[in-house]
Length: 443
Image (cartoon, rainbow, N blue to C red; front, side, top):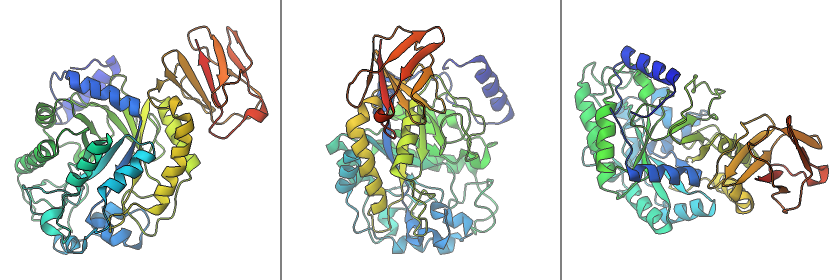
């Protein structure tokens, strides 16, 4: 059992006693797993890919629907099953995708292997409801993407939805996918767990070594027994180094190797998903964010965030010690939205120059503030001044006496003084640049 703060233990025990969701008992991460956790924290930045047959409908003309269109438009299974016949992404080029990711400065990809609609984006032998058997494309995009990732040194993670609006044995129904699907009001939950376990086995055995499994959907029915002990143990038995994370919006369960936060920085809850989940001090953190307002492709959604806004979020995430998983929803033809590529290329230019303050760092000794954050690597602390307008700023001490203080951009000295109140930095106005006012303190 991983060590936790007493409060977290109390919350976890309360949760387990009140619901039949059991985690992996007495989990001790393998040496490979611990090594991969370090890799994960060092590499900081990845591409999230939400892609499936729902992209054919491009959101149905409504903002923000995309991958949820089956549920939000209440499309019955018999009608939704027509979509694979129209899904033929002939422009998909795995090597081009990976080249874009690498040029963008991203180090890993997390892609939807199966979303809530139950459609598998790989050659599943467990169900014919997959991209090879049910579409005119008839190619395994995960296999092609994995081969391209291996060539370029990019790690590949698989998103897998525990929730399934298509499978008849996903029963009792949860908070979504009820009434309209055409499924009978019956089913055997254990059969569905076995189905999920079999598909996970395919993902863990047919694609070589993967980065890990990114779960989603447990929130559909928190009270259910998700057999996490069995599932997590099974994953770790096949690939001990694979990292497991779950987007359940709760404190992490034993057996999970990283904690994720949906569209919010750790501890924040502007989107309403992260309702007070304790931030783990034991495992790596990750936050995921969209480039517009949708996860999957939505032809109407033009609410694109600026590269500056996304860069600031990435920097702030690093100050919390969290990775930044930035999403794209590819078009139904298999290409990545040009607007998304343009944004990634702008961000890559910043990373080319300032990436040292992000990659390989951990959260700094100064907790995140409204004015910015700190990151740390070895004996250097990087102070990211994101929202400060005066010529001087008093920051807390960093626990060690400062040896030098310089601007990262040009390595010029910065005036500073230390006292019991903190460290006073003088930041001339002519040294100010949006997102690029970074002070390096060496101790």
